[in-house]
Structures are given as structure tokens and as C-alpha cells.
Image 1: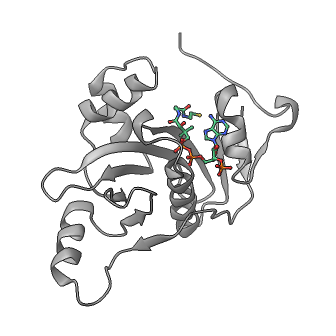
Image 2: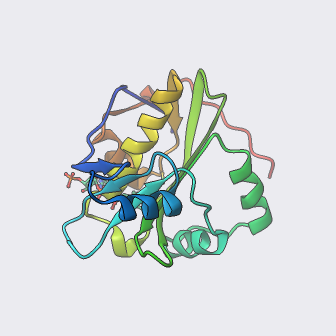
Length: 186
Ligand SMILES: CC(C)(COP(=O)(O)OP(=O)(O)OC[C@H]1O[C@@H](n2cnc3c(N)ncnc32)[C@H](O)[C@@H]1OP(=O)(O)O)[C@@H](O)C(=O)NCCC(=O)NCCS
């Protein structure tokens, strides 16, 4: 099912974006080292947890598969996933912060030309972290990055069970699938 968001759409909860406030140079350095340029913190109810969205921290494919398996997706050959990520327009990891070893707890990626069209794929939050706004924060971050690039149209294909998740954030359902076509290699 194709989707088109009404841009801009930014229902993100309170967030903090790097650089960190003045007076915390060490932490700011650490966060940049771990998460790269443009990282963003998402607030969660548990004050002991810190969650960061990153465009630059390399995603470990085994960790990613752990999450996708946990939500019931079929495993994919890792070398194909590696190539898919390499050819993606945007790869976003959501990390549970640990100064020594952040853990991947969410993920999304986009493919596209970076100018006119983009399509969002593989939106996932680890089950242990679902239900506290992280999926919504992840999608708002993805849309914001695409807006910054100047992308005009964004589409995604939602499983029937998550249509409301996207509608809730302002995505529009393609009416009656009238303009949607598919081709599968097998
Ligand atoms: C879909 C998914 C990414 C949502 O992540 P999440 O962190 O649990 O979602 P959030 O907590 O940000 O939810 C935001 C809002 O959407 C709603 N929502 C969450 N999942 C939903 C779903 N499956 N169906 C309908 N609404 C949903 C929440 O109730 C919440 O509403 P509220 O703001 O009124 O409380 C997550 O459940 C997931 O990874 N599912 C398995 C993989 C999947 O189906 N991915 C989508 C592929 S198209």
C-alpha cells in the first residue's frame, strides 16, 4: 500500500539535537564520536535510558537481524542486506546509549533519488522498546532528513496491522490502490 505524507509532519516528542548544551564538552564529544553529525536524542519515560537517532553510526547487521527476527520478519542473507544498506539513500539507527557499546534498538532506511522521490523501508523498533513513542520519533526524524534533502514525495508500504501507526502521523492512504503496481522477481 503506497503512502504519501503531508509534509511537513513532525509529531516528535521533546528532543535534543547535537551539539549538547554548553558546559558539557566531554559528553558532546563522546556523543559525536558515537553517533556522528546530526544525531538526535529521543526522550523516553524511563529517565535511566537514553536513546539516540544516528545517520552515521554503522549498523551491525547481526544486531539488525536480532531486531527484525524479534518482530517476526523472515531472515535475509546478510550480504544482501549489507548491499541494500550501502545503496540506500538514508540509513537511520536508533541506539540505546551506552558510552562503551550502544545497542541498536530501532532502524529505518530509505531508497530514492534524493531529489524527487523516496521510499521508506524496514521501519522497526525492538519489541522491548515499543509503545513509548520511539517509532513515531524515528519516522519524524526520517521525514525531516528527507525534507532537508528537498525530496518532494515520500512513499512507504505498510503492513495492514500498522496502517493506523502511519495515519496517526499524517500519512495519507493511497485511495483504493488505484495508482499502485508491483513486480516481484519470485
Ligand atoms: C510499528 C512500530 C515501528 C511502532 O513503533 P512504536 O515505537 O511501538 O510506536 P510508538 O510508540 O511511537 O507509537 C506511536 C503511536 O502509534 C500507535 N501505534 C503504534 N503501533 C501501532 C500499530 N501497530 N497500529 C496502530 N497504531 C500503532 C501508538 O499507539 C501511538 O499512538 P499514541 O501516540 O496515540 O499513543 C513497531 O510496533 C514495530 O517495529 N512493529 C514491528 C515492525 C513493523 O510492523 N514495522 C512497520 C512495517 S510497515
